[in-house]
Image (cartoon, rainbow, N blue to C red; front, side, top):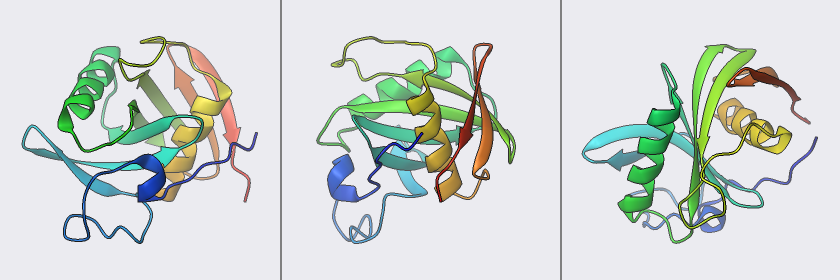
Length: 147
């Protein structure tokens, strides 16, 4: 499944300047400070905007809380969805997802395109390979990235 993804700062709508971010490069493995804590993330535009963040452990509550922090941060000019990921190993991850509050549903079960976006971002961050099983609340999707 090939989903057209754009990792550019302009496409994902990150507000900033060259002092904060190198706006000429892609929004891959960048620091985002939320409530005084710095998090690593990769931001990507597909049909919607996504912020993918690795964590040691993921829960639905953590995805909800991180999504709210991102919404309140003022770092983005567009609504941003949040995907948090627990990297089990280079071929297995567990994700939780939260849609931005201005978008349709707050939670929806894993979809192939959502799994593809998570794996693409984590692959760009060099956390996972290009062949990954993605789990979300018992559902498992295998993602093979196009190279």
